[in-house]
Amino acid sequence: MKIGIVTVTYNSRSVLEDFFASLGKQTYTNHALYVVDSGSTDDTAAYVQAHLPERCTFLQNAENIGFAAGTNQGIRAAFQDGCTAILALNNDVVFGPELLERLANALDQYHCDMTTPMMYYHEPKDRIWAAGGKLQPWLAYRNKHRGEGETDHGQYNVACRVTFAPLCCVLIRKEVLDRVGLLDERYFTYTEDVDFMYRCLKQGLSLWYVPEAKLWHKVSSLTGNMSDFMVRYCTRNRMYFMRKNLPVLQAWFWYMAYQAHYMLDVILQKSSRCRWKLRSISAIEGWNMHII
Image (tube, rainbow, N blue to C red; front, side, top):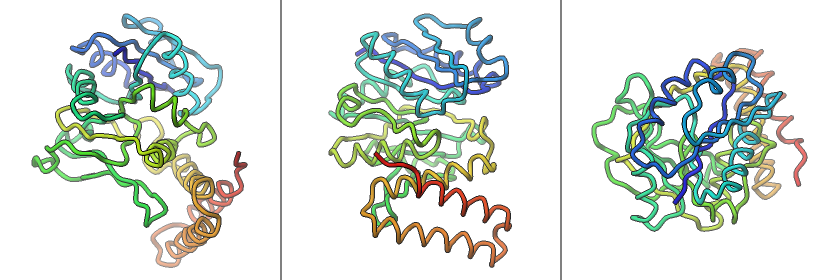
């Protein structure tokens, strides 16, 4: 199995040294790296070109095309080169030398379509970010990370089937993408992984969490933790996901419920009026996005 590792950079210079160092130590050698730069304005492109590892393709875009479109660009290039699996991988991560090998072996061991590792916060290193996750149908398929924020005491040491994992690190057989399609580029960034995993779930495709494979994520190192950018796209894309995938009356119910929740946060002084306005406008934007 030839793995195409696809990563999207955007002003990522500060994290690339650790990323390339981790990748260079992998025991699984049948892989190729596809770095897709999305209009970086720092020296990301120069650094990548100066430190290209072996079997690396660098695809540079003049503008920020977003995570979803950038990932799709890398996937298409990997397929053209004969890759039979795709590892969607953030570059603000560090990982041990057996990550690829363990994820690849687990595809055959569990006879599954996708695998995902234990993901920790970068600091502290024993705090869990995602031990797999799930989509919650009773909450309009909102995603939830298993174990998020917990200290790892071995409580997630058993491999199991899950219904969600962030595309920070997921190994995907080519047949999956042939069947369900690539990422929906209208999300730009955030929630495209929920949409993708939802489509996989509806097709009966299987995703396994593999605790022996481990990764440490520098969460929100590039977009900022709860920045206005993050709030806008998370809110907008949540509404778009619901309108795209749910029956119209159910989607409308959840749209109104979210809008009421945003207002209640202001009344209870849990959020500012400026943040409420941003969320409300972003929700309207997502609801009105064109659907094909």
